[in-house]
Length: 331
Length: 291
Image 1 (tube, each protein chain N blue to C red):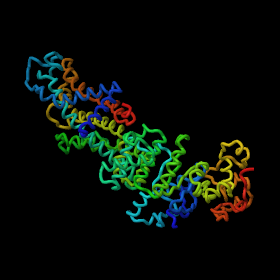
Image 2: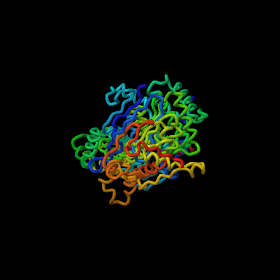
Image 3: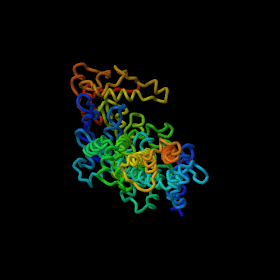
């Protein structure tokens, strides 16, 4: 199947001259329709910047974004508007992503009316109520005339999801969509998103810093791990979780807390040589992970940027030193 | 029925919110009273034009509430008749300057690039022109006896400061996630400016409007006082100007004649400015739903 979305050598630089920060550095990946891909990494690794470029909200410095096989830069204005509506974004902070001066009704009916998804105001209201039911914001009649500040974080996030659904998108970038939501309702929102994926045939790019969440949400999909603007490893979720090859992925996995004390005791702890993440303004040479990497090979890792190479077990990894080593995470 | 009930409920909530600040609400009531007096008052209080030599410079009494002037005419009737023009000119000026500032300020912030540079360059030029001397010079060439024209001139000169403020507010607002979401939904520039950005600046805009109005009152009264604008009829500014030229400040008896129009202006300005406290409350959606 042709990928619904593909990015090639996507790069984003911020600032000028000496102050230039490369937030995203030559990132390439492809996402098949219906697939769920999680983009994982520490804060500042460029995952949100990638998401915003994918959604066409930020212009890449170089590289291409292809939607349904077409470079979005070469689309005519009608084509670009189709793409615009086909790709929606759900932001991290539900307190900032809804206009405080608009009611839920105004938030949901504006895109419906603007894009002629409904015939008139009555139709827009009916559709808005329907969408509120879809995102489990019930009773919808009581919710529709509320202002964002009258809703909880989780309810707001549901409104944001309903708003994204008004334009019937094919692709949704969920940028840390549940990170700021109360832990107790995270799972219900994730379940709701998973249901939408099936119900509306939406492909998800799920951005998160939490590998446990990525594992839960994309169990049958793929995980892409980013570190300081580059992809260090990607692959089918189940392989990446059970047999991570990049030392950074291993470190991330070993840092995920386990609820089961038995399991926690057996888990291998990976000691990093350096705890602090380097500044984007002053990136290490070669593999940017080398100052922290426990398997650092002097003269190799700090000299050459490791290429992202295919793995025999599925996916890609950017570590020529360790790519054939299976490290059992449980001892 | 819903068409009537909706706005009525909105008005009710607005009034209730305005009472939350006592000083602001009093300011609102006084402003309302002055507006009523200026607009409706002239129909009930005839303008006293008859010269009565035996009643020159009388202090306030039950017969003449604000005393009498140098020809024995009732000052109260002049105050009632003299407000309409002042308020009209101020309102025209404030509407125009707020409209220009909000429209081009948000456009400048939203469009960015060359549009932003051109608008800001032009704004900076206008901002450097000393308003009052320019108006004084203009008055020599153009007959500013038309009230609307005077208001338009005042408005055309007083928008730059507000434009800069609106632009900087819009600049910070447009980076918010909800504006990005509106862009992703392809809601269009018109929607983003007037539905996403402007409503979030409404408090600020309304307050700026009232402040622009008070500034316009002072400027026009200043122009009239200097005799640069030949506004006829009884106008608070004209009253001060006449009293001034006839040396009212040198005679204790003439005090009421010069003080009354000054007081009228001062009370109007004070009530408009205190009213802004209540307007702040009325345009806050957070408070609206709690009421």
